Length: 154
DNA sequence: GCCAACGTTGGC
DNA sequence: GCCAACGTTGGC
Image (cartoon, rainbow, N blue to C red; front, side, top):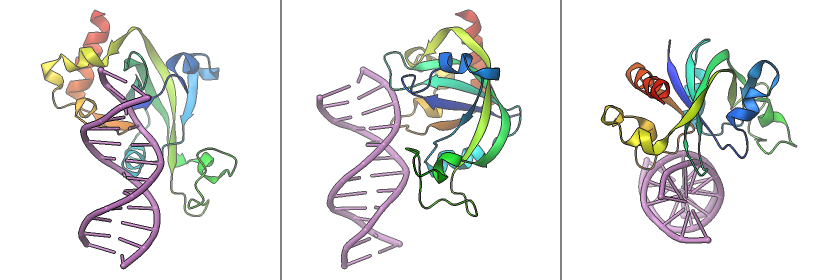
């Protein structure tokens, strides 16, 4: 089993939005970065991912989701009326991929970026690296458990 | 709103 | 293949 972190801007799509969807499930579409795309394709069914709120007043990990459907072509790339439309993608040769994720747990309190930075065991965490902009990133098992511990303590 | 850092594009 | 210009991300 592998672990991931998925970023989203809560103004666009938050964990509360996910919580209120049917089956608390959504497709993670609109990823338009090759590195993130490649990570999407490495995801397996039942992999776990942190749900992260970025570009907001209190950035941080707000919950956990799991991968319920592995990578398949991102339909928004093929839809001219979508803001994510990419004319260079086609049904024959899809350029972008999405997975489906389901809510597992919304933390009672978010684990703020500020708190994550204060943990020495997370020094290598990609999220905390200067200039990190990747919207999907791998999390090691150790990092995963460390952050889950924090969620229990809160 | 600022700005550092990074990704992408396109001319050469 | 280089690299300048531009666009985007995201914390602050």
